[in-house]
Image (tube, rainbow, N blue to C red; front, side, top):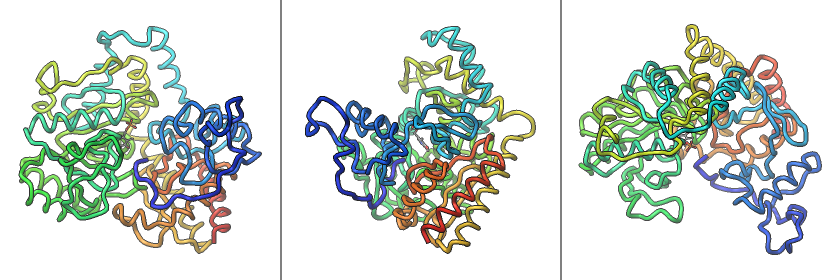
Length: 466
Ligand SMILES: *Cc1c(COP(=O)(O)O)cnc(C)c1O
């Protein structure tokens, strides 16, 4: 989501993508440069309409499909592993709402729980027992979390966690990895290009240098770079990291990397923050920290914890979390935080995952491994270089012949090949996240039929690319 592709496809402006309207066309923003495809006529029209009243026609940039050189499809509904667009094409879906939908679309138990909660009232601004119930499930599931606070988005969770880390340590500096995404909070909306201890340069206008000057950037999977920051600065509050990088494709931590970060943070009196907004409840019920056996001081959760509703959380060690208002002085609040409908969706989702010896995770592993093998074999058959990387149900085929270990490796991939692959897969009934730098999500509902259909489509798409 975060990392714009190094090159974006260019095509000549097309007047046919101009929204139909009585307003003179010249005053309207072009919906996009992409040519209109008749097969997708309703989506094209919907996008033109949307572009009149929403920036880029969307409410989150990657949905605009710019890096894959076409206009987005508009979705009518989803069920299980599939979504249907407004032109009535059905797709096997690997977007999964960018992570929350581990149980698939419109999971029966989640829908029922949401209906029930909504019928009792959408929001009260007074406590409900559902908040305690979901908090209890989170505390029981995640070893490092003693106390948890619910918020409304992953961005808010990370923003609050940074404030807490700074409040608790009395220090300002945050270390972050190049290519890791932690939401659009000012302090972490920093990209890099250069060396380990480079001071952060904002990657968006509107973010003052005075905020990002406290952000130090390091390459993912590079312990020496983190050590160098600590050697140079004694004002580090926290190292914030996605334990499995999922926002520049899928990049697992190198052996010993997370353990090394734990040791460095301890040695230098800094906190270790795991941003598990994507990985939390995705790669294991105990989150990535359970998978790798490393205990962070604070953890950010989102996506799955809200079961598809706007909900996220941050939590950790008791002594730290008791500094949050009203127990302590670190102020953080929210009108809709712990919203009963969101709590109901989260509870129904976690209940399905907690169930019976991690059966859902065993199934996810099996189905995602089937997809990994299928994609790898399809690439070999076609001769297209493809590095398929996976942790559990997070998977990404990189268009490169080398393993991808960090952002620099990721941006060296053939994004034009990915874009062509994406468009062909869409025509074949498979919807992927529209960027080389996104993780695909396998859900509980991706059965053998769905995986095998995906692999045979990939075979055809890759053969065309070769
Ligand atoms: C999605 C994501 C976020 C941001 O969450 P939003 O709910 O989109 O604000 C933060 N961190 C990571 C690792 C994410 O994947």
